[in-house]
Image 1 (spheres, rainbow, N blue to C red):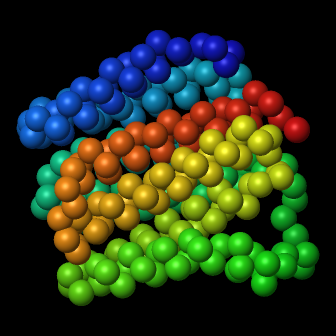
Image 2: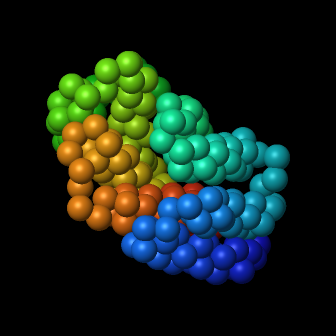
Image 3: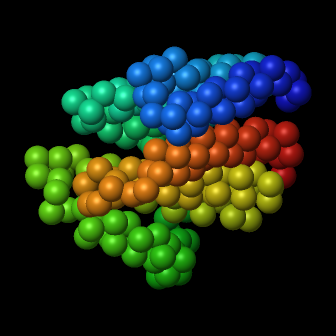
Length: 229
């Protein structure tokens, strides 16, 4: 099952190289073709390689995350649709949060949670998110509330990825965690470039981090299924 769909990864690699080449050559008008193909091919790979768990909530949540990502990718190609793109990626984060909880081999008991330790472990993430918001908040204007809500959910997604440590196979943990961290990095670069100060080669850096993020998250979920504890 898990070797099926490898052809989709070749499509993903092709789309990634094509999209990066278009960014470098400033031919953004053609990215309406390359950018959707990225996530569409990754979705095809995930669906085919997880056929045996069809109908499961985990499969549906990851598939929904990729569908919302595809929609967000297209919307963000048009500056006037930024808020709608943000909304699509907000749904992506919600779906990934659900998937991260479903791929933890433990039962959640709020009475046994050490909230002080949890806060300290997640403190670097909180500081980074606060710093990004501090840099961009003056330019947000009417987008301030949507961006704050999105940033909070982005932080939750990253911290839940970290909390999978020891509750899933090591390969799955590191792939998902690094993917979530790169997702956070990509979003931060996009926000800083748009609302704070233009970043040299921002398009390449943002998309490079985003492409790796999506691939690592999907492969990490797959690793959890391949090597269950």
